[in-house]
Image (cartoon, rainbow, N blue to C red; front, side):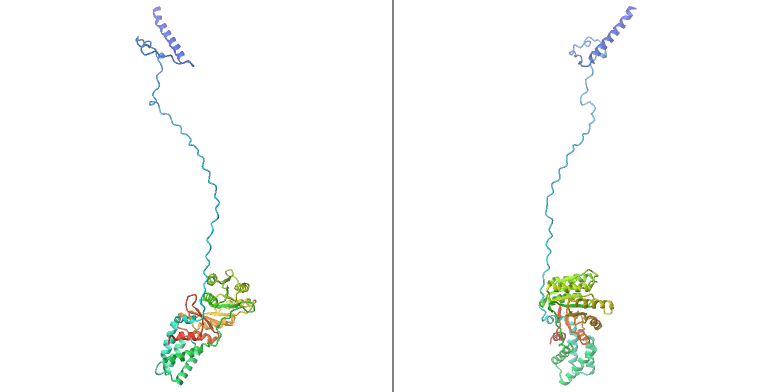
Length: 414
């Protein structure tokens, strides 16, 4: 019985010893028991079994064998944005100065018709080659004179004027018995010049009168080239030494005022214009007032194109004339006619004359027709002189009309 208790007591003692050892090893504030040098560890060399409780804890694994630690992402450093540079004060951009249009100085108008005579080549075929060819025949019978009449009528000379011209030519050739081309040309030139009535006053009435500028109204139908002619008339006046203010009284067509301003800027003239669709009479009145204040000698007023059978428009033209005359009398009323319109221009001229008291005719596009005789027809039918003729599209292709120079150009070179 006692022998059986001995092993039990030994085991109990070993357990108590192991517990005490473990208590001493794990006690806080105390280090682990010092390990005996190799070869002196208890129980190893003697082959004794050592309880697990007294075995030293295993060494830590190498760093390579450790589980990788989860990297904690670090917050990105907040770099403060650089402060914006202080604004540099700069002067506002300066627009380049607008180039002033170059002021043109047109050449004087004297002799301009002579320089432009070649522009009448179409009419030369009728008068120069046609009529002179007929009159140069060896025998001028009735049939030959009928052909002369037909040629003159086809050139829009007019029936009455043609009858008179042919009658005088027949009488003079019969009495004089002439047959040479030079003599016949001289006779024809004399009769045509006489038909144009060279004694009519063809000058433009300009200049200061009673301390106020002269006023020229420019009227006409649509499509006759009225606004363009008005600009060219301004160049004629400037070329002859006059100072001009233009009134853009054609308020129904926006492009008319711009067109007139362009013409005026080229010769250094001033333009008075009003709102689109405004009262034309008010614009005309202001233009004359501007001319008085500016001290110019001529005010040129462009009016709206109108048809001669439109009573309301013609009445408006009369109103413009009455309003302008509050400043003083109108010096000139120039009617712009299209030479290519032929005899229809006569009916236009008659109606305008009744309303606006036309004093002169500006005949445009004369270079584009063979009907140069319309000059004679207008003057004979209305007693209104042709004062200016247009012989091209150039700015200085408007020439003062001279009957003898015109006839000479019609008949061509001798």
